[in-house]
Image (cartoon, rainbow, N blue to C red; front, side, top):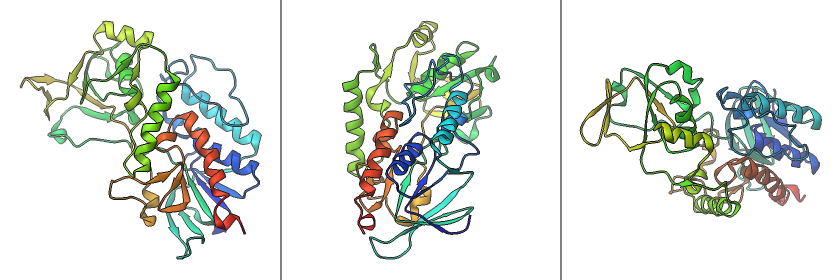
Length: 352
């Protein structure tokens, strides 16, 4: 696309981006939504096929159109990609894809001026930007002693396909979140596994408590308000016991060990000095926010994060981050899309 002018550019067409587009359209605000994916579905397009709807965390409806009836056995990647596709078509939300945004910069020194969004398909000038790029494209690989010497296979959960590819191998899973325990359950049914985390995970016997969820989101929100990197909500809420995970516990798959001291060519060195031989190390160590294209705006503060007021970046009020920090859940993403649009309409550029 050549350089175009619009009111708002939305970067990303996952749950948060589509929510923002819905509210922009409803308020009659001109917008362009740019998405790096080949088709609808956001990060859900890349989830492993064995992650079925029955086992994913609660998925919130997109605003305006409820999701269709769910087949619990359908892969989440297929169901949610189809739902997002139908949503875009039924509401007439035109998404330009695939478009890789390379930078967002100020066009001039006027704080009420415009922002220039550059991409591999041209540039777009806008009064405001809603960033909804999520985290899937930035898997976090921790630096660990000896990691480069390991002769087996190492992969991140972002690259996971199926437990079958590990049959007959000893798989080490590193990480204390939902993905780690879910994949331990799956892989341990076909082969030997070992589980390592930095700290003992906190487990909850009950279903997810609304107040606990609210408190967790508030803690994450306080971190980003202070300009600190956000934690995941699950890091605060803990893990929920499900029947499948109880079964994994009985198999011994959830016998957690403290982190090994180093990685060696044939395995990992345990805290007692012994060597645990392994064929595969699966890093379930989370993701980081995809924000490199915002670097020209110099938004990060001394704490390493981006100071936020709700969805609004304190250092640049024309930029809003949705699906970031406290709004990284599906319910939070919907709310953030609505809040971002409401705040943008209060900017000086929209009062003229």
